Length: 91
Image (cartoon, rainbow, N blue to C red; front, side, top):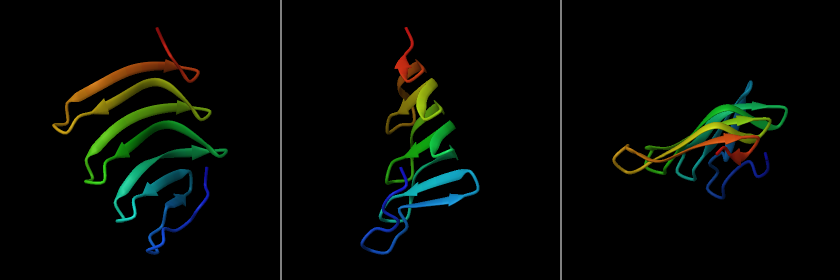
């Protein structure tokens, strides 16, 4: 999951401080951030658009989607919401 460290312009692709992993866009704005344990996404992760607006909030267990997944539209309203269990949509 942790591969390329810098974009061509020198901007960091990601930064890992303790158990918090932050991904960046080429312009330096945060792309995604959350808990990273044993090389896997864990707990709540937030994903942002290049504008800096919150785009998605997703929860992970052992690197797989779990619990709630929410995506927001450009007006910050919930556009899509789904629940997951073991990486699969819970029905």
